[in-house]
Amino acid sequence: MKVFKTVKDLGDLNVAVKEALEVKKNRFAYKALGENKTLLAVFFNSSLRTRLSTQKAAMNLGMNVIVLDVNQGAWRLETERGVVMDGDKTEHILEAIPVMGSYCDIIGVRSFAQFENKQDDYNEKILNQFIQYSGRPVFSMEGATTHPLQAFADLITIEEFKTKARPKVVLSWAPHPKALPQAVPNSFADFMNEADVDFVITHPEGYELDPQFVRGAKVEYNQNKAFEGADFIYAKNWSAFEDAHYGQILSKDRSWTVDTAKMQLTNDAFFMHCLPVRRNMIVTDEVIESPKSIVIQEAANREISCEVVLKRMLSEL
Ligand code: CP
Figure 1 (cartoon, rainbow, N blue to C red):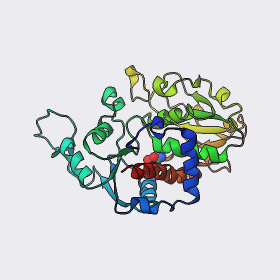
Figure 2: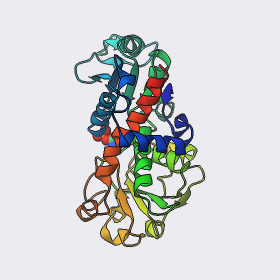
Figure 3: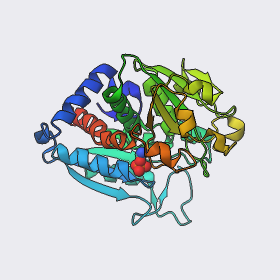
Figure 4: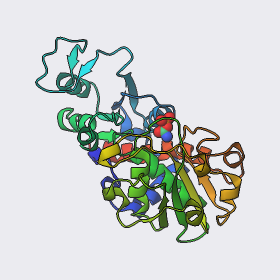
């Protein structure tokens, strides 16, 4: 594996999940693979889970790890070609990326949507420059449009907790005070559409996601109806995708907050969220603290999803 951005990069999803469950049983079995190999984890944005789980996965595989917070201590990077660099940006990304590549064997990149130019975001301008110019295998630690390590961990978690062959999984929009990217719901849809689940997306009108990720999924605008019979509720906020309101908040309607009454409409569903979560905006204290909340197990599986990706990349170096 040279690139990890979408579900397609994993190949057969059943094989990938099986491999993840095997890795989880003995996460140090492949320690020799990463000996004398270095992971560079580059963060343009904040992180708790991705930062820790990626380092832990690399250490499980015997790798050395360098973490770079681009906005804290590195030179400010210019990303546009042709710009006269007479401002406050000291280094061009076109030199910085191959330099970073020269110090490592694999690169992980976190670079969120900037909401300044939809085309730049949906072309994954920063992540794709790392793929093009680093000379190294590159994986997304959440790009502008996808968060595949999260969605892979989500699928592993659903596989572990499901009690029927084909569970009903509902991705529900929920309110948030800030405009958030669509990366997590895009990737969740991307993975669920390939998994053996009955997948439903529910959100207020105007929050339609990119059709390339929604594909054949059922979209239900009535949240209560969507929740009926669900086995897994996956809550997440996202901002508008459509051109006229790209990156904007269209609603903060707290009637979409996942609460106990809504969970009672389900088939005693598990509650999932990628974290960090705004309590009593996205989900009530009662639901996230209930025995059906599996957000911690879900976060723990981030170590496993990353270890599978790194293991596959190391195998092909
Ligand atoms: N879910 C997730 O990616 O968490 P962090 O933003 O803390 O890495």
